[in-house]
Length: 278
Image (cartoon, rainbow, N blue to C red; front, side, top):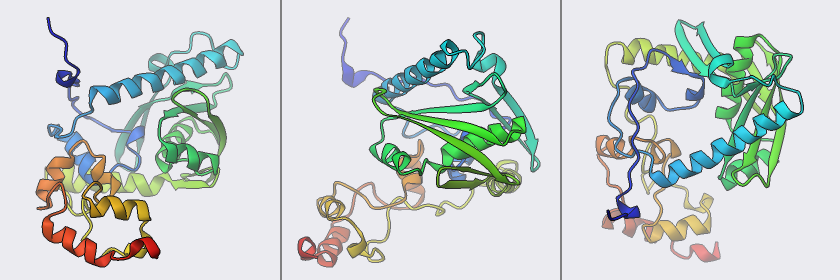
């Protein structure tokens, strides 16, 4: 039997969705719609990414075990058995699993990340909105005003613990990051009623894979990104499309190309002439 890393693939089965998930916070309407409709992924997770997820799960599991060893969490706590939430609000169902509950019922959301920017923003007290939204959903379900967000690097060398507070109805704050769950859930409810149920695809231009190069204020773009754009090694657009499991499908629907065309490159070079001296 021959083993080749190039030929390795991941296998994930689509699940029939009957509810939104707490972890859906911040996802685009298109991604939510495709997920509900079981649209085949054009850009599935690679096996290398699965390794990162596995490493992240290991970090999170080790932290939960540490909490148990310090008698802050019940020894028999099991996320699947004890952390399940089923919330009905804003005319939609929301399900999820709390990473861990402290003995007093305080939820703790654990995140392990390999992203330099995620860690940098966390150090600055600005965790991702999706993290805060997920934790806020658990706090809302449990009816508590305080929760904790634990964020660590994949190798465990950097750790952060943020105390999160309910500051108003459906409004939660971790560090400098504030989210309003009602605003997000109303978006989901509208998407469900107007698009998911009648099977009508939402706006394909909500986010753009590729910005119109003539509309970009190039002096606001870093010199590193300009250099990469000039050499067709980075495409300036919305991350919601760039990291979507349906990226290639969205690119096709938006009628654009994966890379810059020769015409676009000419415009980029013209607009960024002399950029190194700006």
